[in-house]
Image 1 (spheres, one colour):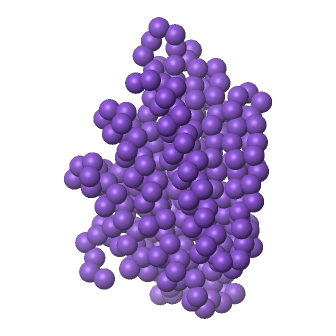
Image 2 (cartoon, one colour; image 1 turned 90 degrees about the vertical axis):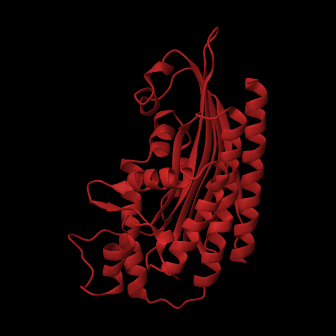
Image 3 (cartoon, one colour; image 1 turned 45 degrees about the horizontal axis):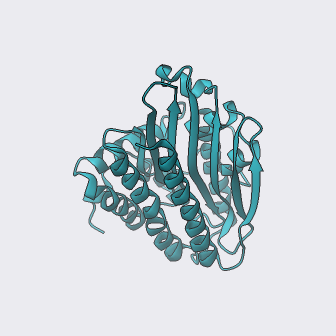
Length: 307
C-alpha cells in the first residue's frame, strides 16, 4: 500500500461525501443552509465544520470533515492499541449529527473514518471505522425496518455475516450502561477494520458512507409534516439528555477529539440545542413515551418484522 496515495484517496472521498450529504440535507430542509467554518489544529491538521441551524426541518445539525496528525496519540487511542506507542498518526473522517425540530423525526448520526500510524522501518498500522445509528423519540416500526434494511443491503456485498456482526456491535456500543438502555434503535458500528485488503476495506467504508442518505431521507420525508405538541417537544428534550450523556461519557470520537487537542466547537457540535433533565422523571404507563423504551429501544432484529 502506498501510504500517501491511500490518504489522498480517502481524503478525496470524504470531502465529496461531506458535500453530497450537505446538499441532500439542505434540499430536504428547504429553508436553512449550512455555513462552513474552516479551521487549523495547532498540533497538526485541520478540517471544515459545516453547521445548519433553525431550518424548516433541522433545528441543529453538523457535518464535519477533519484530518488531524501528530506524534503522540491521546489516551483514548493508546490505551486501546498499545502497539501504536512511538508512532506518528493521521486520522481522517466525516462525522455528522442531525437534530430535527419535530419530535416525530428521529435524530441521526453517522461517521466514517480512517486511521494510520507509522514508524520508520516498520509496516504502517491502519484501519477503518464508522457506521450510522438512529435515535427516535416516537417510534415507528416502518422506519426501524427501513433503516436496518438499508444497512443490511450496504453490507451484503461484503459477506452475509457482516451486517449481523456490525449490527450487534452497534447495539453494544450505543448503550448507556448507567441507564441500562440503548441510545436508539441502532444500525451499524465497526472499528479497527483491516481484516481485508486496503481496497476492500475502503470500499466497505464508502458503502456505509453512501448509504446514510438512502437510510435517513425517506424517514424525514414521511415524518416532517406530522403534527406535534409542546408536551412531545418536552419529551424530546428529556430524551436528548440521554444523547448528551452518551456523547460526553462513552463516545470514542468525542474522547479522541478532546484528548488530541481537537477543535472543541467542532467536536461538541453533536450536542442538541435544547435539552433537559428532570429528577427521576418517568413517562406515564401505557403512553407512547413509555412505549419508546419498552418496545423500540430494545436490541431486536428489526428485519424479521412484517410492515
